[in-house]
Length: 240
Image (cartoon, rainbow, N blue to C red; front, top):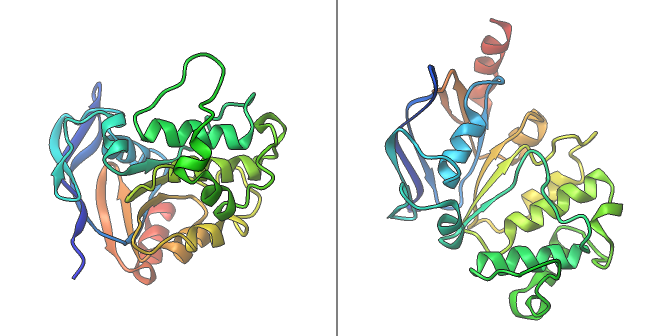
């Protein structure tokens, strides 16, 4: 029986007078692929930011792989095995793909670089070749500034995978893509022992990838179950 990779208990977050996450509890099994869906303003990205440690919860707790990480920083959670992608890519445009990957892998190892020169010894040590192979990024000598949007999204996915995370948070990985066809197979081919939590407005991608769907509305879970049961709930929310 698979254990829990993530346990969120009674999590709450307010921004001023607005309650964005309301007493939310959630368990995610190791190796599970969970899609979090819901309308704009439902609290999806805020929940991911809380799990990642980018913002602090007002109440509640977060455990990752049996460890209480509620008070850990985002960097500490990354070193503990959490990977994260964002709606908008944050890449070093003046670096090559290989250099971006080296910086990301070094950061996951608690190493840093000074100035404009990326670490030069990460490629062989930390397996950036695997990232480039899996995310279809060859040749890696290309400058990021010259890449099309789809390739930039694949670089962002590779950065999230740097350091071999055990829990991967993906915030709209297909954002801005005309078709998720090239990204879907990359996500589906990730190791099955990697736990994935996905926010995605591309419902075809979400329903294809997910083992389980959670629907948020106004900061609360209104559905938690198999994908085939989620569509009527989504229709009711969007038609309301």
